Amino acid sequence: MAENKTKMTKLDVYQFIDTNLNSEQKIKDSHRIIEIMKQVTGCEPRMWGPSIIGFGSYHYSYDSGHKGEAPILGFSPRKAAISLYITYDNEKQRSLIDRLGLFKEGKACLYVKKLSDIDENVLKAIMSESFSYITAHFPDHAVK
Image 1 (cartoon, rainbow, N blue to C red):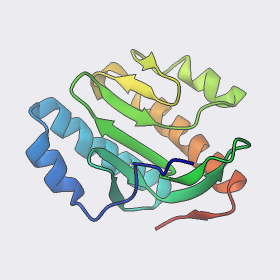
Image 2: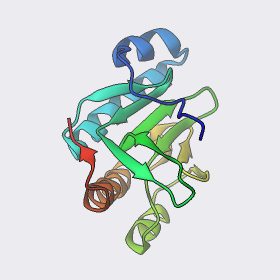
Image 3: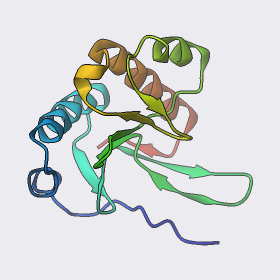
Protein backbone atom coordinates (compact mmCIF):
# COMPACT_ATOMS: atom_id res chain seq x y z
CA MET A 1 0.00 0.00 0.00
CA ALA A 2 1.40 3.39 -1.01
CA GLU A 3 2.12 5.90 1.71
CA ASN A 4 0.17 9.18 1.77
CA LYS A 5 2.11 12.12 0.35
CA THR A 6 0.10 14.75 2.20
CA LYS A 7 1.18 14.86 5.83
CA MET A 8 1.22 17.53 8.48
CA THR A 9 4.45 19.55 8.34
CA LYS A 10 6.15 22.21 10.42
CA LEU A 11 6.07 24.79 7.61
CA ASP A 12 4.71 28.19 8.61
CA VAL A 13 1.18 28.79 7.30
CA TYR A 14 1.42 32.58 7.14
CA GLN A 15 4.84 32.52 5.50
CA PHE A 16 3.41 30.14 2.88
CA ILE A 17 0.53 32.53 2.15
CA ASP A 18 2.61 35.69 2.12
CA THR A 19 5.46 34.32 -0.02
CA ASN A 20 3.74 31.87 -2.39
CA LEU A 21 0.57 33.63 -3.44
CA ASN A 22 0.87 36.20 -6.19
CA SER A 23 -2.60 37.69 -5.89
CA GLU A 24 -3.59 40.19 -3.20
CA GLN A 25 -7.14 38.82 -3.43
CA LYS A 26 -5.97 35.23 -2.77
CA ILE A 27 -3.86 36.42 0.17
CA LYS A 28 -6.80 38.33 1.66
CA ASP A 29 -9.22 35.44 1.03
CA SER A 30 -6.77 32.93 2.54
CA HIS A 31 -6.45 34.96 5.74
CA ARG A 32 -10.25 35.19 5.96
CA ILE A 33 -10.70 31.44 5.38
CA ILE A 34 -8.21 30.81 8.19
CA GLU A 35 -10.30 33.00 10.50
CA ILE A 36 -13.48 31.14 9.56
CA MET A 37 -11.95 27.66 9.92
CA LYS A 38 -10.41 28.60 13.28
CA GLN A 39 -13.85 29.75 14.48
CA VAL A 40 -15.53 26.56 13.30
CA THR A 41 -12.90 24.09 14.55
CA GLY A 42 -11.19 25.81 17.46
CA CYS A 43 -7.93 24.60 15.86
CA GLU A 44 -4.85 26.44 14.72
CA PRO A 45 -3.90 26.18 11.04
CA ARG A 46 -1.16 23.72 10.09
CA MET A 47 0.47 23.02 6.76
CA TRP A 48 -0.24 19.62 5.20
CA GLY A 49 2.26 18.93 2.49
CA PRO A 50 3.60 21.94 0.62
CA SER A 51 0.28 23.71 -0.13
CA ILE A 52 -2.69 22.58 2.00
CA ILE A 53 -3.69 24.46 5.13
CA GLY A 54 -5.54 22.15 7.51
CA PHE A 55 -7.33 22.31 10.85
CA GLY A 56 -7.37 19.39 13.28
CA SER A 57 -6.83 15.85 12.05
CA TYR A 58 -8.47 12.46 11.88
CA HIS A 59 -7.48 8.92 10.99
CA TYR A 60 -9.44 7.19 8.24
CA SER A 61 -9.49 3.67 6.89
CA TYR A 62 -11.23 2.48 3.73
CA ASP A 63 -12.52 -1.03 2.99
CA SER A 64 -9.76 -1.25 0.37
CA GLY A 65 -7.21 -1.16 3.19
CA HIS A 66 -6.06 2.38 2.37
CA LYS A 67 -5.69 4.41 5.55
CA GLY A 68 -4.13 7.62 6.65
CA GLU A 69 -4.47 10.94 8.41
CA ALA A 70 -6.14 14.05 7.02
CA PRO A 71 -7.18 17.48 8.25
CA ILE A 72 -10.76 17.75 9.51
CA LEU A 73 -11.18 20.92 7.42
CA GLY A 74 -8.70 22.41 5.00
CA PHE A 75 -8.06 24.51 1.94
CA SER A 76 -5.42 25.23 -0.63
CA PRO A 77 -5.12 28.61 -2.37
CA ARG A 78 -4.19 27.33 -5.81
CA LYS A 79 -3.57 29.44 -8.92
CA ALA A 80 -6.88 28.67 -10.67
CA ALA A 81 -9.09 28.61 -7.55
CA ILE A 82 -9.18 28.04 -3.82
CA SER A 83 -9.79 24.35 -3.09
CA LEU A 84 -11.93 23.87 0.01
CA TYR A 85 -11.58 20.41 1.55
CA ILE A 86 -14.91 19.92 3.28
CA THR A 87 -17.00 16.77 3.76
CA TYR A 88 -20.44 17.52 2.34
CA ASP A 89 -22.36 14.37 1.66
CA ASN A 90 -25.45 14.59 3.83
CA GLU A 91 -28.84 16.01 2.86
CA LYS A 92 -28.56 19.13 5.04
CA GLN A 93 -25.18 20.02 3.52
CA ARG A 94 -26.45 19.41 -0.01
CA SER A 95 -29.28 21.89 0.61
CA LEU A 96 -26.77 24.42 1.95
CA ILE A 97 -24.49 23.95 -1.06
CA ASP A 98 -27.40 24.83 -3.33
CA ARG A 99 -27.36 28.30 -1.65
CA LEU A 100 -23.58 28.76 -1.54
CA GLY A 101 -23.09 30.85 -4.67
CA LEU A 102 -20.61 30.58 -7.52
CA PHE A 103 -18.31 27.55 -7.23
CA LYS A 104 -17.31 24.32 -8.93
CA GLU A 105 -17.53 20.92 -7.35
CA GLY A 106 -14.77 18.34 -7.41
CA LYS A 107 -14.71 14.77 -6.18
CA ALA A 108 -13.68 15.73 -2.65
CA CYS A 109 -13.68 19.52 -2.60
CA LEU A 110 -15.28 22.78 -3.67
CA TYR A 111 -13.43 25.21 -5.95
CA VAL A 112 -14.00 28.92 -5.36
CA LYS A 113 -12.39 31.69 -7.42
CA LYS A 114 -12.82 34.28 -4.66
CA LEU A 115 -14.72 34.51 -1.38
CA SER A 116 -16.92 37.31 -2.64
CA ASP A 117 -18.46 34.79 -5.09
CA ILE A 118 -20.04 32.81 -2.26
CA ASP A 119 -22.21 33.39 0.81
CA GLU A 120 -19.83 33.32 3.78
CA ASN A 121 -22.58 32.42 6.26
CA VAL A 122 -23.59 29.42 4.16
CA LEU A 123 -19.92 28.41 3.92
CA LYS A 124 -19.62 28.57 7.74
CA ALA A 125 -22.72 26.39 8.09
CA ILE A 126 -21.34 23.81 5.64
CA MET A 127 -18.01 23.80 7.49
CA SER A 128 -19.75 23.39 10.86
CA GLU A 129 -21.73 20.43 9.55
CA SER A 130 -18.56 18.91 8.12
CA PHE A 131 -16.66 19.38 11.38
CA SER A 132 -19.51 17.84 13.38
CA TYR A 133 -19.74 14.88 11.00
CA ILE A 134 -16.00 14.10 11.09
CA THR A 135 -15.68 14.44 14.86
CA ALA A 136 -18.76 12.25 15.41
CA HIS A 137 -17.85 9.52 12.91
CA PHE A 138 -14.10 9.29 13.42
CA PRO A 139 -13.32 8.63 17.07
CA ASP A 140 -9.60 8.92 16.34
CA HIS A 141 -9.76 12.66 15.62
CA ALA A 142 -7.63 15.39 17.16
CA VAL A 143 -8.71 18.96 17.70
CA LYS A 144 -5.57 20.96 18.32
